[in-house]
Image 1: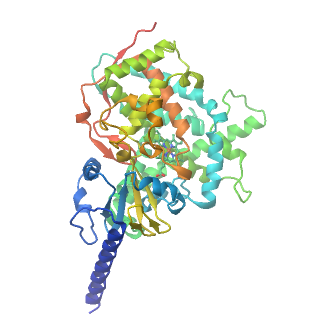
Image 2: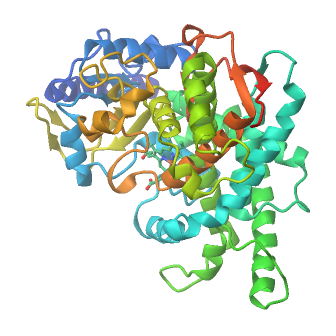
Image 3: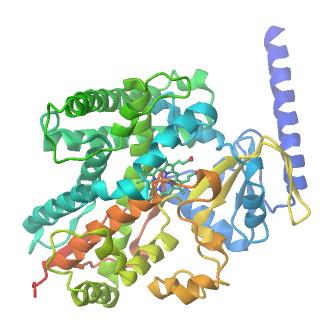
Length: 496
Ligand code: HEM
């Protein structure tokens, strides 16, 4: 009797939910794929890897306008056309909250900048904006240059050895830059092997968190806590937090000794010093736990995105030898190919390299989708209506392929970023760092790290690959990935 009642209530719930979703879809006036299953939605279309998911979404997007999908029972518009996106960006205050899947990032720690709103967000943002302000960015250049130079030296062992996957070296380079600039990497705490392990545990944590997003049945915390994914994720996060906490305590001791003039240091400042100098809104100090949360948010936001960018840029240079030569010649002409230290002024004189970076972000935006929650009903220019409570996803990879503004959208062409071409376009067709108040605030920092690293790599080596763009296996994970890695061979450049 009780069982029958539970089954009847369950079925009724499913039917109601299904009908409600269909009504929401109809009201949005967005096209949707056929065959929506109760509870499963369109999930059956995407069975397979993250590569399959990305390719299928790109295929669906060929219909040329934004569309709706059911992720499980949740109606979710994917938006990428200029009839709708600029309108939503203007209504930004109705979509300030992040999509529900972002909450899974809280597995890294309670306070996650990416997801947070209200006081904790404002406190962290205030400190971090100071850390990445123009005045402070110069302080990190020694780190960018030293680590990139070490990277170049380490690569010498690969010369003449044929093609290898450069992804591993890129991970090591970028985790070192981030650990050093964010926390003042302390060689007495971390050896090279420990840095590699830290990077691995951290990326494992992110992968586990991301994988939860693909398992709709693990969305409720109750079920998730019984899963093996939860256990694996906790293990990786615990390791990462332990090392992060140790580095923070060590840096704090150094910072205090420095303030008391007990320690001489040539190192002016790192990101987390700003936490030691600041107070929270209630006047209390930031605890090691608070700072650990923020450091992991920054690592989450900055690590894979920067590795992804550099990986795709190197592949683009290796595939397009003429473009690589042009970038090299620009460095040579400006007499910068025998340098071991690049300054902000040097970087400003390399417009072609900038174009190469931007064109790579156009085709391979490290964040291919951005999710928001609708917090107030929105009327759309197509006469449709988005209901409060649903999640929407901006499909950046498709916004960047608008054929009206990029006549050959799939072709890598840095001339798309000549200043006169950029002026002709609406800003929404290129926004690798997002938009509005929740735009990436590590963007200038990221550009400088990437550009400095490239200057060192391009002046020292010529990159080759036997791979073509057709071999790429793009996957939507936390950051855009190429499942084939970064298969290149390198040849040293002669210095003039
Ligand atoms: C090429 C590298 C990077 C790209 C393409 C990138 C892109 C983005 C995008 C698209 C967002 C918005 C995501 C969303 O709202 O859904 C974002 C947010 C953010 N990024 Fe980046 N990012 C990069 C590197 C970095 C770095 C190096 C840092 C810091 C060291 C950083 C810190 C952040 C933070 C804290 C947020 C959250 C901002 C907020 O919600 O208010 N990012 N990033």
